[in-house]
Amino acid sequence: MHIIKTNWVNIVGVFLVTLFYVFINALLHSATPEQATFGAFLLVCAYGFMSWGFFILALILYDLIFIVSNQRKLEAKLLSEWAIISAPFIYWTIKYSEWVFAVAIIAFLITQLLRAKKIRQATAGLVSPNL
Image (cartoon, rainbow, N blue to C red; front, side):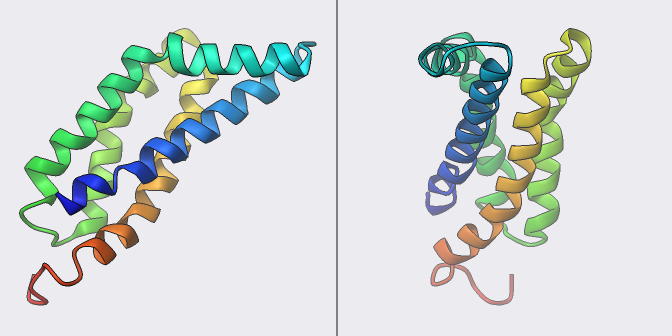
């Protein structure tokens, strides 16, 4: 359960970076700061509702299947989790030319690398050093 709780790093990191990108993009396209703020929240939260659901569900399932029981080669597992979960978003970036997905993918990669440290901290007293 400690590993599942480290998903906050991904969720918060991707959310904030995506929100910031959408906000700046709206400002660059002549929106007022109020419009940019409202539009960013609307786009990231409402329009992206299904994407967020898929993202969080995929994080939890992958962690339960591959990481919770065995933390060997943690970085490799986190990178494969990133590749598998990012695949649909990469497709959407290419098909729809929606660069917000590319920004989210890059943010997800960075937060995955940060998450490895959090997983090690969370499981320090729980995992045998031989794993």
